[in-house]
Every structure is written in structure tokens, then in C-alpha cells.
Image 1 (cartoon, rainbow, N blue to C red):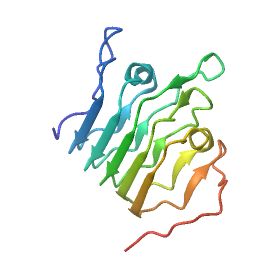
Image 2: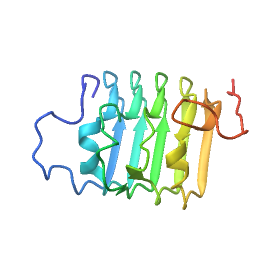
Image 3: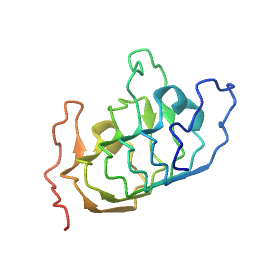
Image 4: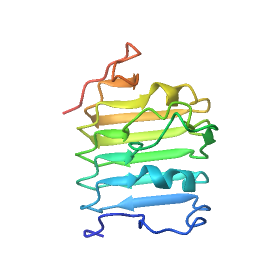
Length: 164
């Protein structure tokens, strides 16, 4: 999988991947982004996402280019488990606050390991919907804040230090 540069082709049928429940992306060393903004509405049934050992991945959910002003209804994600490991270039799980466009109420397990470029975990609007979160494991990461607002400012007083 070393040569994979994109998971989702630009030309997809409307129903493509709409029933996808689990996705594991491992050792795709040319991949930069897992989900582009124009593919997010197709993955609402996704329950488990694992991304491991992808050297160049910088963001998981790319929300750049989404028009939050025009969105009229919140899309509720079924994502329950999010595992991110060994992504040395990862800067963002969400590169923009989804601001009531996406809800992650079912998310109950988040594991983030060995992501030294990641500085924060959740934008504010995501934390407002984390009603079922039971397990949060973060280690060997550059995470300094758990929650930031849309200007990148911390909203909680909890800080972490990276483990050497």
C-alpha cells in the first residue's frame, strides 16, 4: 500500500461507500488525508476508523471547503471507535471545527498514540456531542490541549506533556 495517494476517487457514484461500517488504513506512506470534505456525507454509517503507520498523513477529516453557513441539518455520525497510531506528520484530526454540521454522539473510544505533530484533539463543537465517550487514551503525542475553539485557543485547563 506504499503507493496509495488517495483512498477516494474523485468520480464516485452517489451510493458508493454509504454502508461502510469499518475502515482500517495501514502503511499508506504517500497518503496525506483520509477523508476529503466532499466525501464526509457518504460515511455516516462508519462505526470504526483505524489509521496506523502512515508516514505523511496530516489530517484525518479535511473540512476545508465545506460551507457551514449553507448546511441546514446536522449529520449524526455513527462512529464509535477512533484509533490513530504512528502518524508522525498528523497535525489535525479535524482541520476545521465542524460547527454543528457533524455530531459524534456515539463516539465512545478514542486512542491516539505516537502522533508527535498533533497539538490538540477536539474542536469545541465535537466535545459538545461526546455524550458516550468512555475511553480516551493519548500517549507519545505532541498533544498540548484536548479542546480548542475555532481560533485555535484552548478551552480547558488540562495540559499533557509528551513522553520520551
